[in-house]
Length: 375
Image (cartoon, rainbow, N blue to C red; front, top):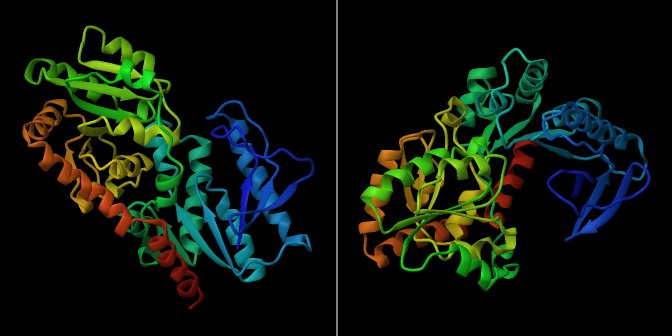
């Protein structure tokens, strides 16, 4: 099995540097080929799109280099929908089985979450690539439980869709955890309060203004509650301005991925919020929920889309999106519970990850698609 990845991403600072187009290595028993990616400055700019196209060109050119074997199965994984072109190339030229892994529904996510016009040229191009992938993939794998409905509406081939949620590496949680500093805890985690905690990005898509609104309501109805928002992002300053005058809101700096669990342990309830957007009617599978569920704390999310994970595990509650008053009422229910009752609900989340959503179980299910695609 060979993993092909770009050596440049705005999300990582420690990817390998090398001359030439490719660098081969072995990582954890896998053959890895690093493709020399194009660097870009603007995350939402043209140069990032160009980097996607460049990557796929080099993936296609690998087929003409003798040192690389011809694949029996090609798994093309979005974000970048240009991976569809590589998958279709290998399928057409070498009769390779093409599995299209959909981690976000593009370009609809650009329209609903980023406010991009339906008439934007990029939306048009990505829309054509999306349909091409749905039509010509031998199997489609999605982390959204409602993806089959979406594909059926688009091309009428929903039978090819298989729902596999975000896999969880238990090894990461068991062996790579670190403790945040005592100074961080003493500065940002209040004592003697019922702590409602959010941990993650603070951007427009995270809809944290509704949690600030909830804190404003809770200041009168639940004075024992404190909202601790951990993270960073483009909206943090605006959110802080919105929260001025609220003594029940604390903004804490982001921590490393390996330190998140050592912060979440101080929460009584973990929260998230989402806008009322059409894209969510197909569901979602978030890394944030994985972190939350492993922390064995109840989860409450303002979300009105296709429910998954939290309801399946029975480890929390979905309250209506953008309805801060109802959100506070739900938080009040957890506040009124005995500590052991809350803990029992939270433990269901971790048990679900370990028994249903761990990477070993899901990798076996994914591998079975190789044979199905071969049928």
